[in-house]
Image (cartoon, rainbow, N blue to C red):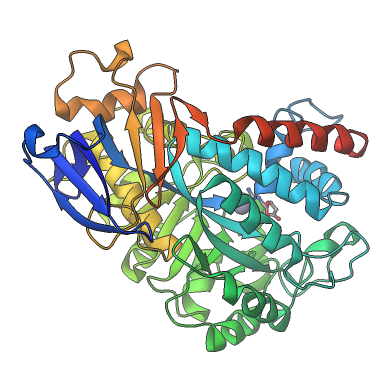
Length: 456
Ligand code: NGQ
Ligand code: ZN
C-alpha cells in the first residue's frame, strides 16, 4: 500500500484539509481520508495542494508535430479546410516509429500540464500506400506504447473512416491511410483487447458524419461491448452543417440523434454549431460535449453555446485535439473567455450550487472527461485511479490565497505552469516540473522532426 498526505486536496465535494490518500499496487485508490493529523501521517510524503489530474478527451497525437507550422497565409483565404490539406500532406509520410515518438513527446507535455489521461482519436491506421500493416493495430499499438512510456492513462479509439463527404462519397487519395470500414475497426479493437488494463481502455470513433454512415456506426455498436466509449466529430464547421442540410435536410447533430442511439457512452467532439433543440438533445442524451477551445479557435470554428448547454444540464469535457496547446488550463481559460467575450459578462461557467468558476470548470471537465474516457478517473475517491497533480505552492501566484481561490488562480492567473508534480496510477511521472523521461523523449522527437522536415 502506498500513501500521500495532502494539506489541501480537491475531493468530489470540494477542498478538504489534511487528506491521506492510499492506493494499491495496481494504482487504484483504496482510501481517501480527510482531517488526518500530521502526526498520524508523519512517515508519509507531504504535499500542499493536490487535485485530480485532468482528462484530455480528444487527441490526434501526430498533429503535435505540425504545431506552429501552419500559421502562414496561403494565396487565398485560409480556413479549417486549407489547414486540413496541410495536415493530410503531413500525415501521408509518417511512419509507425514517428507516430510513437511524436505521441511520447506530446504525452510528456500533457502530463507536465496537468493531464493524466488522454483519449486518442486514432485514424492514421494504414501504411502510406494504403495497405494495412501486417499487424492490423500497428499504429494504435505505437500510440499505446507511447502512453505506457510516459505513464499517461489512455483510451484508444480506433477510427471508422470510409468516405470523404456526406452521401458516402469516395475517399480522396490523401485519405487512403485513414481508410477503415466497420469490420476493420472491429478487428483493430479485437487486436487491442489484450492491452486493456488499469491504464488502458479501448473504444471506437466514427470520424464524422462525413466519413461514416449510420449503418456502419450501428454495425459497430452491435458488437462493441456496451460500456465502451464512442466518440465522433460533429458540427465543427458551418460548411459541414450546410452540406449536411443539403444532403439530408437535417443538421449533423439533429441527424445523429435521429439515426443512432446516442447515450452516456457517447462523446460529441466540438458540436460547435447547434440550434436550441440540438443543445437540449445532446444534454438530454447524457452524452458528453468534447470541447477543444484552443483548436477550435486556431482553426476558426466558432464558439460552442456553452452557457445554454450548461443551463440545459449538459455534460462537458476538454480536449487539445490538434495540440496547438498542450495544457488543460489554456482550454478552460479559453472556454470561459469565449463566453465572456460573446455575452459581454463575467463568471459564466457557474451553476446555482457552484458559484466558483475555477471549481466549476475543473470539476465539470473531470466528470465529463472521466465519462468520455470509460475509465475510473476524474476524482480522488476510493475505486478511482491514483491520478493527481500537485501545484507549485512556492510560486508567488499562489501566495496568500483562500482555498476557494486556488483553482481560479490556477486557471486564470498568469502564464507559468503551476503544475509541479504529477502522479498517474500511483506513480510519479512528473517531478519538479519535469517528466521523468523528458530528455530521452525529446531527443527522439527532435530526430523525428528532422526526418519529417522534407514532407512539410
Ligand atoms: C481531424 N480535426 O480529424 O484531425 C479533424 C480534421 C476533418 C478537427 N476536426 C479533419 N479539428 O474533420 O475532416
Ligand atoms: Zn479531432
